[in-house]
Length: 370
Image 1 (cartoon, helix red, strand yellow):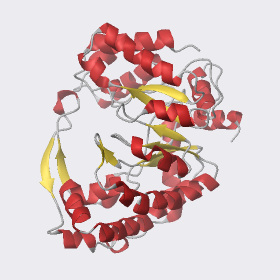
Image 2: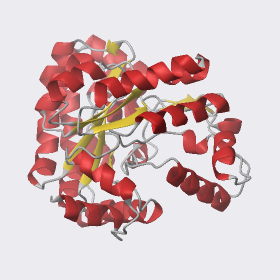
Image 3: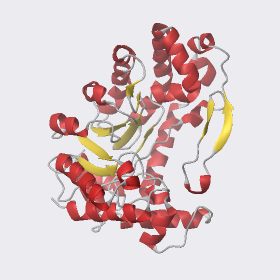
Image 4: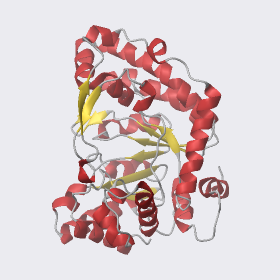
């Protein structure tokens, strides 16, 4: 896509004051904007920070419309250039999936979930799972319309930034949602070959979503798959290279052929697989601090987008000089690369000290100009 076309696609208004959108799309197209663009995750629900920045009296108990207004005001004040978003997540599996519960993360503990359930009695049931039989086939036209509607809604909610839609449960993340960690690791450990065949069957089923996404009128897509832990791969790397990355190539091919920009996200440390992921045809890496951003910048900094990778632990526990040093580190690596976006790569949760969050933003703004 030409930059002009993408700007209009992303904003639906093309206004003169949409410099975040212009800078964001310039970075997506590797056209070195005059400032390092940015995005963040979760801080727009850090209500203590949002109150200070916006002046809106809001917290976790506020009505949804007040929270929504506060989030939008905060995102504009912090000049987000890119809004991370996917449509297809664990809900597509209905009730036939594992529930692992959820620890407290959000303000006020509103996300706590003590319910734990697994629909599988043993690994043999896992290894025999037929995804088409259990989850069925979806109407392709409806899927296309759903993706386009989701993208349009994101554009309306955030007209000053690059928007997208996408798929969260691409491959490994889909298996985690369905099986849960315990059954996944036991089945993979007991019979890696059959677990690979199970993965192939899952990709056959999820492929219908990728085909629909390819047909949707959307220029930028987010593809998410948590393929590793913080320590790296949790299955032997050879297994990934036999069963994950060849399947990525199959899934991503229609997106590439349709001219879309593919942003890829995985939590954890995927340094070992950076080259494998690039070889699958993606256009951008979204990464946490444990993945080696310097390697990405050195090898792919002129050809790919990359987003991250400031460490929230520095904001959580560091002094001002530590926070400055962390932003300086990211800028040293990314500032010379046309597609770099600044971000705290592992979210800014609501227990992060307010003064540290505000200081982080102050240093970002100070150093963001090229």
